[in-house]
Image (cartoon, rainbow, N blue to C red; front, side):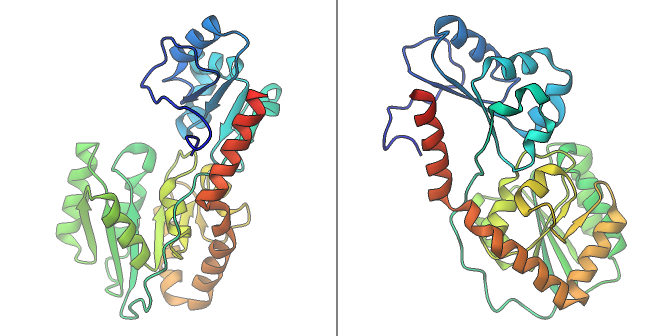
Length: 290
C-alpha cells in the first residue's frame, strides 16, 4: 500500500537502519524494535498498529506494551471503537485505519433448502469456538440449518471437541484448515457468517463477509461493533451459546430480520474498500513525515 510512494523494508524486527519512519505491528511483540528505534532515531516518527491482544489484554498488564504506547507518535486502531481501550492521556494519538478486502459478488441464488452458516477462524480460546460448539449442539434438531466451520485446531482439545460434534451431528461440518480462497468462497456462499470472538481488534473475516454481501452474527464486543457499527442488530453476548443459537434460528425463521442485517452490512461495505485503506494509511504516513 505504500510502495507506490516510498521505499519499504519489511522485517521481523528492527535492529538498525537509516529509514525515515518505522511502522511497528503489535505493542508487546514489537516492543524491542520500538525501543531500538527511539534510541537510534529519537526525532524520527514511529507509528504503532494495535492488535486485539494489545488493546484488550496486553496494555492493561504488560509493561513492555505500555511503554510502546508512550514511545509511539501515532497509534493505529483497526476498529472505530478501539480508542475506548486506551488510557485517556494517549487517546489523542489514536487514528482509525480500517482494514480492507476486495469486494466479491455474493453467490446468488443462495439455496432455500437450508440456512448455510459459515464459521471461519482457527480453534483457539480468543476466537471462543466453545460458544460456537454449544450453539451447534442446541441446533441439533434443525436439519434446515447447516454449519460449516473452517479453521485449524491450534488447541488440540478444541479440535477433539469439534471432531466429536461433527461425528454426532450431521448438520455441523468441521473442515479444519483451508486455503484462503476456499474460505472466501464459503463466506460468499453462506447466508450468514458467525464470529464469536471474546477478544478482537478488527477481524478480517468479518470484513470479508461484509464485502461479500454476507451478513454477520457476532459477539457484542468493541472489536466487532467497531466494524459493524454500534447499532448493529445481529449481536449476541460473548460466551452465550444459547443466544447465538437463537440468532441463527432467527436468521432462518425470520427473513425480514436477515434482510435488516444484510442492509446494515451493505451500508458498511464502502468503509472496507482497498483504495480507502491505502488512502488512509498514505495520508497518515505523509502527516508523520512532514
